[in-house]
Image 1 (cartoon, rainbow, N blue to C red):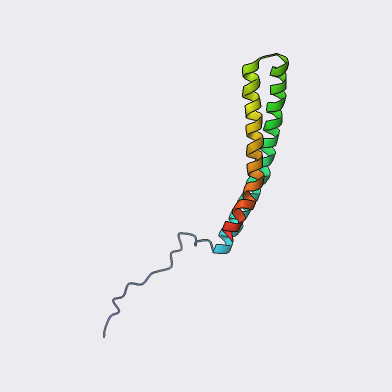
Image 2: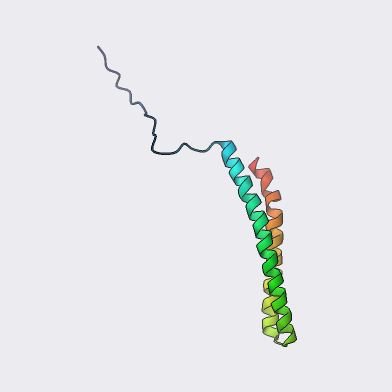
Length: 95
């Protein structure tokens, strides 16, 4: 009688199975949609707040803080545009 000396792999029930390609693609698309939606909303609201504060310091004639808040407002507007456009730039690489 000969014994089989090959090493067999047992099914590991402790760890979850790896996600399929379809599940990973769905996750990435949902993540991009979430980041696009909330990134644009948060950056737009923050930019509006910065513009209001910028106008307040403009009235008070404080040029240093006017430049700071204007820079922040334009920065948040730029980041909102990046959040709005980035999923369309990344989607061709996912498929």
